[in-house]
Image (tube, rainbow, N blue to C red; front, side, top):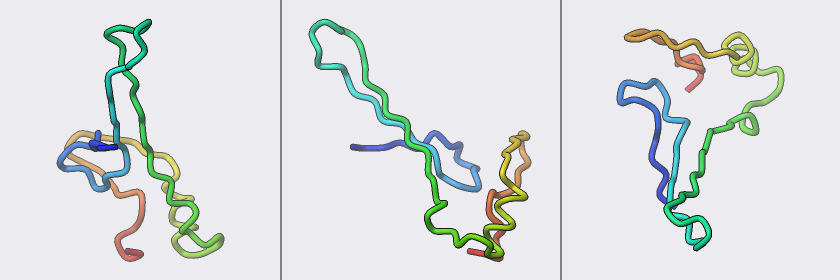
Amino acid sequence: MLLITSDPADAKDDDDAVYAEADKDPAKKGGHIVTVAIADVSAYVRPGSALDREAYLRGNSVYIPRSGRSHVARAHF
């Protein structure tokens, strides 16, 4: 499955992607099946860690053109 990111070229993270293919069901001629993939890194974050606390503060994304703040602080990469 070839996933293509739906994030713009200047995104601070590439964590959303899509895949589409023609539906092979003859009853749905011209239809497509679309798969949407959204990254969930929560399994890699230790509860109570500095990264977890910072993620809590950034738990909501607001997108402003030509501006932005990464979901995760750079110091934790």
